[in-house]
Amino acid sequence: FRNMEKQTFKAIVTDHTKVQVVEEHFREINKGEVLIKMHSMPINPNDRYIVNGFFNFGRDGEFKGIGFEGSGQIVEVGPDVDPSLIGKKVAQIGNPFTRIYQGSWRQYLY
Image 1: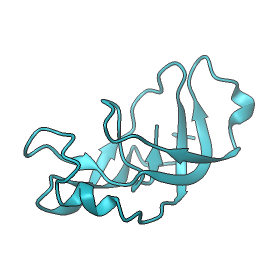
Image 2 (image 1 turned 90 degrees about the vertical axis):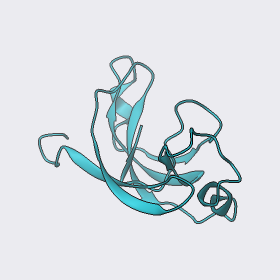
Image 3 (image 1 turned 90 degrees about the horizontal axis):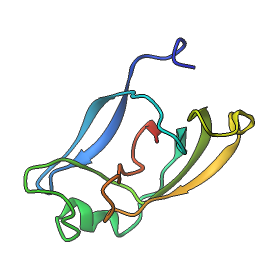
Image 4 (image 1 turned 30 degrees about the vertical axis):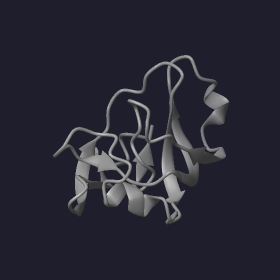
C-alpha cells in the first residue's frame, strides 16, 4: 500500500480559534491497529462544539482532529491483526476525550 501512495495525507484540525487543513505523515502501525482509508465523514452537530472550544480536550493552542464518526476501507493492519481484514469496509466512531483521538475528518485514520 505505502509504495503506491504519498507518505503524507490531509487532515482537518482545529485549535478552537480556526480550522485548517494540514499534511500528516504516515507512521508505523502499532499492535492491534488498522489503517483506514476514509470514504465518508458526516458533519455531526457536536463537531461545532469541538471547533468552538466547548469540548476543549487539548491544551490551549494545540491542534486537534475534528469528527466523531466515519466509514472507510482497511488498507493496512498491525503486526498482530488478521491480514484478511485488508479490503474490508468498516464504520468508525471516536471518543474525543481519549489521548489517542485523531478525529475522522481526514484521509486516513489509525
